[in-house]
Amino acid sequence: MKAADIDAIRAIITRAKRWDLFFSLLGILSLMVGVLTFTVLFVDMAIQGVPRLNLDFFTSFPSRKAANAGILSAWVGTVLVMVLTALAAVPLGVAAGVYLEEYAPKNWITDIIEINISNLAGIPSIVYGLLALGLFVYYFGFGQSILSAGLTLALLILPVIIVATREAIRAIPQSIHEGSYACGATTWQTVSDHILPYSSAGILTGVIIGMARAIGETAPIITIGALTFIAFLPPAPFTGEPPAGLFDWIFAPFTVMPIQMFNWTSRPEAAFTVNAAAAGFVLVFMTLAMNGLAIYVRYRLRKNIKW
Amino acid sequence: MSASASMPSRPGAASLGSGVSDRLSKKASRHVKERIIEALLFSAAAFSVFVTVAIVYVLVKESWVFFETVPLSDFLFDTQWTPLFDDAHYGIMVLLSGTLTSSAVALVVAIPLGTIIALYLSEFAGFKVREIAKPFLELLGGVPTIVYGYFALTFLTPILQRIYPDLPGFNLLSAGLVMGIMIIPYVASLSEDAMRAVPMSLREGSYAMGATRLQTALWVVTPAATSGIASAYILGISRAVGETMILAVAAGMQPNLTFNPAEPGATITSYIVQVALGDLPHGSIGYQTIFAAGLTLLLMTLAFNLLGYWLRKRFREVY
Image (cartoon, rainbow over all chains, first blue to last red; front, side, top):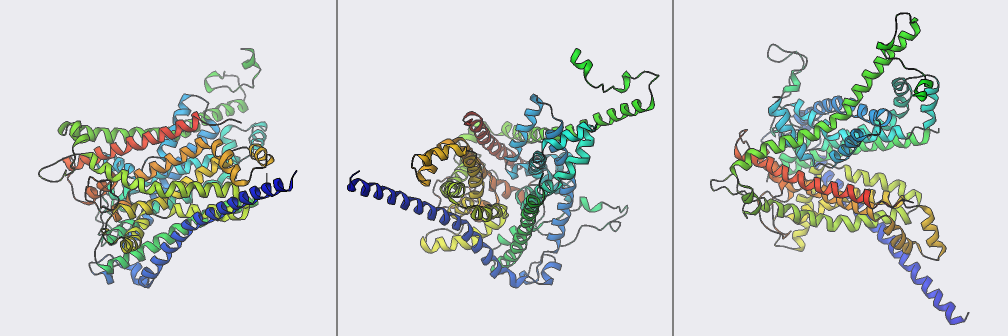
């Protein structure tokens, strides 16, 4: 080989390596766009909002005066709605996931259910709001209540929980099933004694991620007609108008954190924008904490379980 | 039938005779319990089908009433959308233009960045970078959209106004840009999954021929993962079309037949929010418009979802 050829080859290699380096930098740069946006968003909101975060902000009702307004009715509403969402979505989602992994025969019914679930995951959240408006609010007559909102969000996160349950179950080795069946266990005994306990951490991750999504959902709850200005709390058990019961609160009107934030964001006065920043900071903090928890659970899971 | 005869018998309750010992009859009750549990679990799984049916039923039922008053041709071809005025016009095109414009802006951001991030994470990044970057992307996707809307309105729009002073306070551009950032994680993580599913032997073959990482990534991995990447893009489009709060907050809610992102505009989704915030009586024509708009939205996302599903099935490379 002539020396000129070697030089030419070297030049090609150098050029190719330069492109490699260039693309690596481009990749890091693109990642940084995401990181930077998130950081700016978080810091900007923190600078504006954190000075508003004192005890009064959490224990006051919304008010026409920005300085007196707080998020009491919003966070109480969010907590109550989340309780109903979890109560409805977790049993349904886990049951559906278990059925699809452990029971479902291979036939067209199963195919329809599977395609349908992946399709549900792609339906925009506001369409769930319209469903809830037609079905829960008017057809079932639940009204614009905590119950309607909880059920709506439950439907919305159902696919998340089903998919997480299935993935968690699929991660369990086949030998566990076979061992259990070999000992004469029925399918349900296998599921309840082995599959569910071993997949519980994975399911928990999915549930937390689903709930984190539900906390931030605004559109479907606005669609069912949640009020934006609520200066009272849902009745505590046994305190409402007689006949007062344990569950009066589920039919109470309500507001939630994202709606409170939306309300403040859409007002022109700067003082309310500060309130919006403060509410947004609390909201992002909650979703971050939940997502962080989910990542941590998953990390621990991967570390601890060795089949 | 000889196969079934050799199988361990699982007698149903009905097949038990009178002279059976206690142990066997207990098994019979166990069998019934198993069947009941299976039926319960099945109904939970079938519930998801019920949800879809309910969505279609509610939207079609309310839209039906709407289309009895408003002819379909007006809905599709009228160039004004003023359903709440005395001189009511119902041209969905106006809302569609807002939806398409903002989605286009979002995709211009999300598709290149998402693809580059996916290629970088799948082909270039070391294990450590990936372990940090992937959860971070998840966090980015987990931020509530109302917060993104606030960010677009109070942070990005003022910055854009400094560069481009004529920009109105509400505009599709800043909403679209932020929406693009929001969609990056979806595009990136799905594309990356598709790229990582490409078998190692293809890469090794490419490296053995003397290709660099970039050459392998662009000319071997990307073509092999095309169907997965395409379905990731389609999912991104369907997210953008269905996104609500960013647009409701930052794009204004005035219906505006325009494809210029520097103008304010309403989208299908933000119109629904606008109506829901007001106080429309149940059963009025204004109330029915949101179902007609919702049906349009559902059909669009359904078309995208089916296309994505079909692409994945049809062009999945089997190794």
